[in-house]
Amino acid sequence: MPGEEPASAVIGGDAAVPAGSVGRDAEGERAPVKERLYGGMTVSERRSARRQRLLDAGLEHIATRGYAGTTIEAICVAAGVTARHFYEEFGSREDLLAGVFDETVAATVAEIDTTLDASSLDPAELEERVHSGLDALLRTFLGDPRRARVVCIESVGVSPAMEARRREVLRGFATILEREAGRLVSEGIARTGDATLTSRALVGGVNELIADWILTAPEHRPSVGQLVDVTTQLFMAVITYRGLPPVRTTPAPQGQPA
Image 1: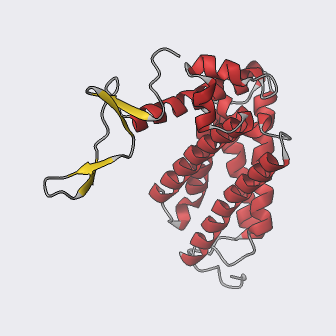
Image 2: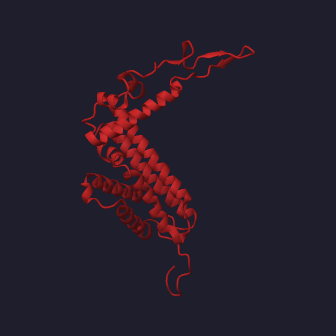
Image 3: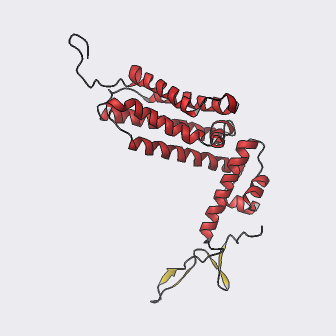
């Protein structure tokens, strides 16, 4: 396709220099040859940009046309690349789906971690911490409904490998909750409890809530803020009732159990 550089060489000067080739320095020692520029970018930069265009095109097509209705040819046209360049980055259409899936999950986990790291562990602010974490999850996920659709709808039932990937991600989110439980215990905010199954149940519930939101007509959807409030109430009910009851911050009245 016009405008695409040869994948195996860097263009510059009078000849193409193979990427990764080496030369000699002033003392005769072997030294890597700096990548030359093609259109103001190195080969690795162009390849990275091309991969991102493919991911962006994959997101748009899979979310709007469905995975079954998405073709590699259409993705290549949208990304402005050839089929050869597609297969340099992804072995198949399913590999592209997995790439979009992984990109969304990574961004969501990073946002949750950043939010929790910045929030207070003060027992009096436990509900605010829970609310902040769920807000980071749901707003990142649903801020671009296309991404939520790819992860929660279009990736379902594609193949055993993709199902294993989905299960791994759900358990990964549950592990974040388990980590938080351990954090609360270590800070003296909560008592020790077995949070593994409870965490998986909560994550499964949130996943279903997201899927239902995606499949509901936009005019009938609750706001993301409403989802955050409802899930916060659910998490707090579980934390304070069965899973990890908060430690009292003041002495119990005389005659009442602590």
